[in-house]
Length: 254
Picture 1 (spheres, helix red, strand yellow):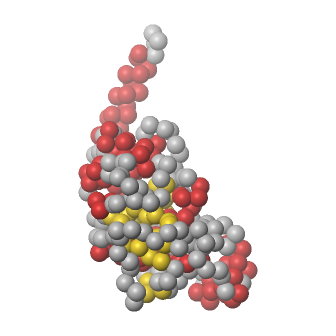
Picture 2 (tube, one colour; picture 1 turned 90 degrees about the vertical axis):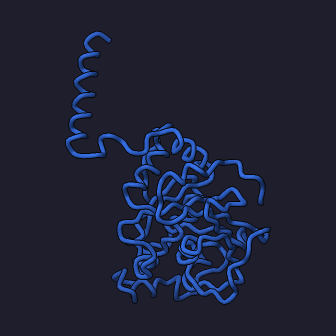
Picture 3 (cartoon, helix red, strand yellow; picture 1 turned 120 degrees about the vertical axis):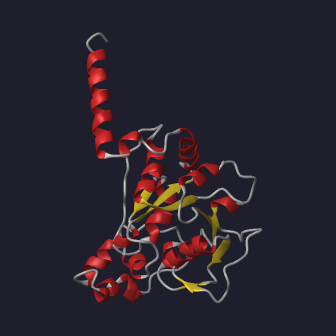
């Protein structure tokens, strides 16, 4: 599980992030060289990710740790109880009109297959001892734009965001891992992260699966982070207008 890092994560330092990016790895076997989360810790899965940022240190969560929400269900460590499966919680919270709406939503929520992850390792990227399955970056929108542009810069890949109003941890941890797609969500749109006040309302979470990490890191190192057109409205009009005029002139004699 733990080898010499294949990727250079130093380009992330140039983003000036308020909180460290966190690498996440799902493991059947107990992680080596990483301390466990304290046995008396009682947090939701979203809070555990945030703890890795705030404490700025690596640790692993196991099926033996207490989890206060639906994280173990998302991780394939437990199943829904019948009343949870029936959608009663979302109706009680007022997120859904009736339990049937909450129950219907469950078909969309990504979960790991049962039993494949007994442990989940979390580490800030400057302390990584493993290549992550998913890299999670929290950033204000102007910085998140740079990260997402690093996805499309050399590929032309489109931006896509998938989420549900509850069980948001599945979308920024499991969904990218299972689909191979970069995903981004606004935590303040999801009931749990908003209620727990984990991130500011203008924060985006960008989740990058392992197959996209090399591309994003390479492009962050190569491309211009701060585009001239983003400096001001007038700068945008001047640059765009100048480019269009120049290309129109050149196109007369292609």
